[in-house]
Image 1 (tube, rainbow, N blue to C red):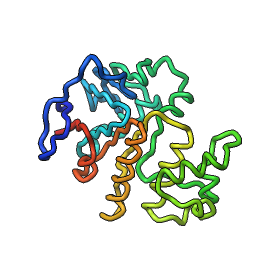
Image 2: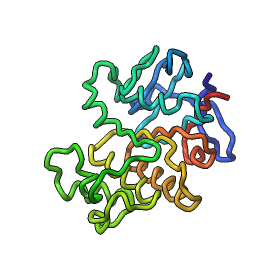
Image 3: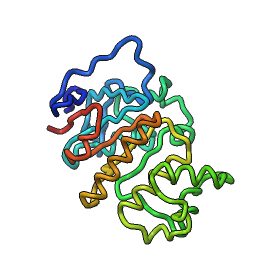
Image 4: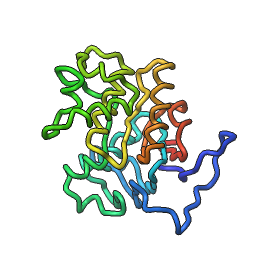
Length: 227
């Protein structure tokens, strides 16, 4: 079950999340969403609204369906009920490939492909402009010299940044981050969380799923599940 979505108060508590009629259409919205896994409903009544420039965290222990939620948002799986909206449009009516360009999913422990960082950023793109790849890399705080690094030899923190840059090359309106600080040391985790805030400041809507209080701390709003 899910607890009510709440905005983060400055003192670390929470206050009810109010929505005005003047609020723009959220980048990602779910309405009474239900998630099933193995024939069993693991999440139900999920109502989320992730606006441009906002970070929302879904927090809960492992095995509560958080990763399955992200997969449903980009139609890698289908929900057991409810609706997903992207920029106000029903995701079920969108072409799945187009949807996954608009909403970038960065999985837990993202896979680095063979070859250098440049090849990883360009994967799946038709003749990407070198400047666009460099811009995506720079947005994650990495120097252009990283383009020639062997992707599978990067540290965990570096690989996490390259995975984010790879998602940014698609020019998404939103990012879905699955346990973005998992397996990182404290310094690398703090660096990734600072990056998340900087990407939100560029106008992206960002949804994090995590079991770590540290990662949830950077969110503007938080939904607790499985408690």
